[in-house]
Image 1 (tube, rainbow, N blue to C red):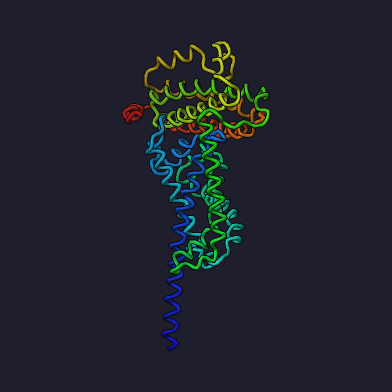
Image 2 (image 1 turned 180 degrees about the horizontal axis):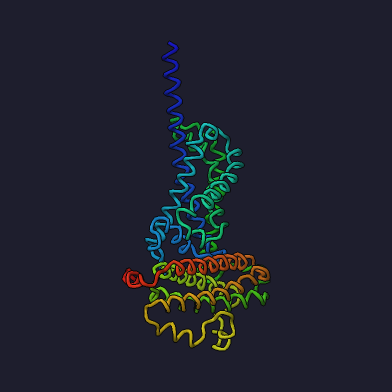
Length: 380
């Protein structure tokens, strides 16, 4: 009799553990879908381009070949897939592997622990996993981007007790239905709000910060940085086409995608906040901006043959242009009135510093006698 009772208890324990894993898997899929939608809709509101961010995440699977000047669905899909897999993995660890301690927690307790879990998991990725797996992701994205996405995913964790009831009993007990309704309602309202703001932004009505129209510094920053992005795109496309170094071409493709997207955001903000399109800057105004390539620089780069000298000249031109962008962005992080401009400027400075470091590392390891083999690699 005692043996039979022990066997029944063991069977019940195994079933409960299976229910924990099933509910954790469902939660991971829901959390991934929610954070994907929120990040995609909200990126443009703080000056980031969701498609470029997803492309960079996708390089975990596609490596450097996943970097494109023109971002396509393959690159975006790879990034979303990597993110969904990570969310699923973290949910399975929290409620499956650690289910002995977490599966029986109440929604309020889970909500309190979810933020700490988001910080812990992103720290593990940022410090331990990504430097080894794909450092490009750390070079391109400031730490707060990944942290924000982890927080979004973990915000759905209080749904777990309700999900576990759905896979455990028939009919479900629904003891945690009210908590589930609250979490789902808040998440749904958040997505609807982001979707409305994205729709308005796409229609040229990006919501402005109070008194933004009177902020002279903000106006100058948006105009000047948009002009910088146009020049940066032209330089980056030239490097993507003509650089002999494979890594330099990959970096140039990412630079082009980045600055095309940033320029689109800045132009949309200008139309929303300051009226019709700004008058293009004159040649003299552009020449006066720090780091802009001169006419002789353009002539030398456009007429260069695919050799080591082009790569060095291109890297020097981009580094000078990036240095000017970094200086402009740093001023905006201190003086811009709209906080979204400060956030965007911080991201620009982070990415430009990292791109300079990437080019330096790529060129320092190139043996010029091997240039013929590098040139034979497929072009973008």
